[in-house]
Image (cartoon, rainbow, N blue to C red):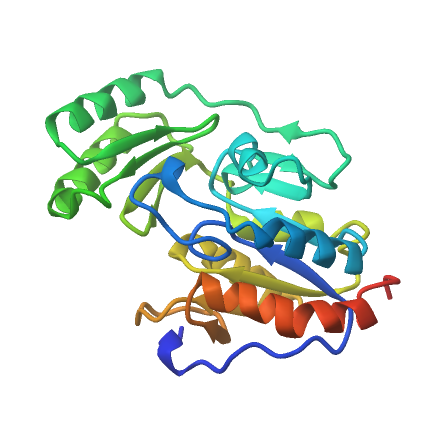
Length: 260
């Protein structure tokens, strides 16, 4: 693991790439609430151009529910993995595949009580997970984490906690962005390309590890000194968008199609 402060910027493509893009904190700036984010108007047009240049080998990989990711970029459609891989659309025109939904009603009730007694915290209910946010109540972090640990302990085995930026998520074992990358890389148009994962959070580390294991490139977004297994860095979402438009798109138009 390396301090991202000292990582070099990502390269310009010199071979066909498969792009795996986190959304919040990577393509778009974070906000106080998940429903308060804004998508820059030029971003869908950029993603459309990249998707075309790559012959469809572009996927949005998010912890958000797949329907939320779709809504952010509607009416444009891409390959998407939502809920850390709980929901999956392998191509823009493909049907959505879903894992079975876990039983989390009792856990949700306990977390709703916590949110009611801790102003500024937020419970995000997803199809396959529960996420407790404290971005607007940073003093509640230790209590929020203790509550999530207690809720997890009260469940049957098979659930895990996943920390992120001012959030902790309760989700079933086996859902992570590394498994998403592995799944996409088994089939065209992603198979046989250089996999590139771009993300900003600890939840993206599994994706970084998966592309590195396949000879790919892992790009950390941000300036914080949290250790990462990524090998490249961009400072913020604006830098990501600029790099994609300035360096990646022209190169992908040369190398993106056909699949090698």
